[in-house]
Image 1 (tube, rainbow, N blue to C red):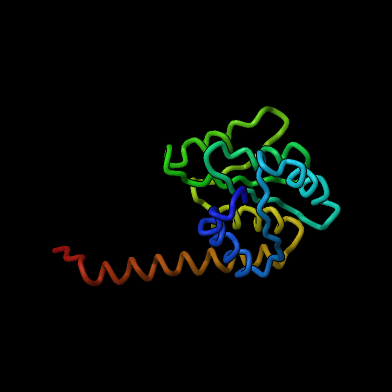
Image 2: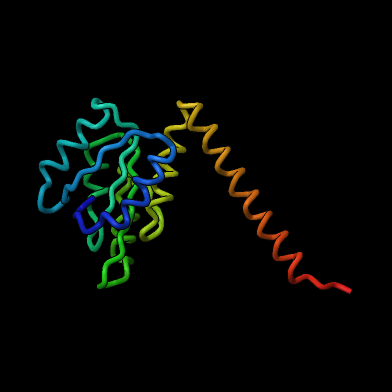
Length: 159
């Protein structure tokens, strides 16, 4: 993440990765204040066993692009809401990457989806993750169907 102040947002991604037993590391690297460290981390990430990088940053939100510029791993950007422009600045900075340097972007403060997207990418070569994803989707579907049945029983009064 670009700053430790991003942790409340990023924590949702960390919790999701834990839920799926996906190993991860957490770092604070700024595209502007610690560019050498961010570059070194991203450049070595594949050799260090990483499969996907997730970068959270607000305002100018250049971290995801800075990582993508030096790594061929998939990079997922989490635009973090700031008080100035409600995260629109971060969202646009994350999605407006030049051709040849892709960054996937999730919603503003969309850390859980960033983790799930990373897990989906990893599941291409890890069948156990694919199975967990399928199980969670089925649990979510059953939850919605239970809610529907409960509301229908309480409110539906057709003649």
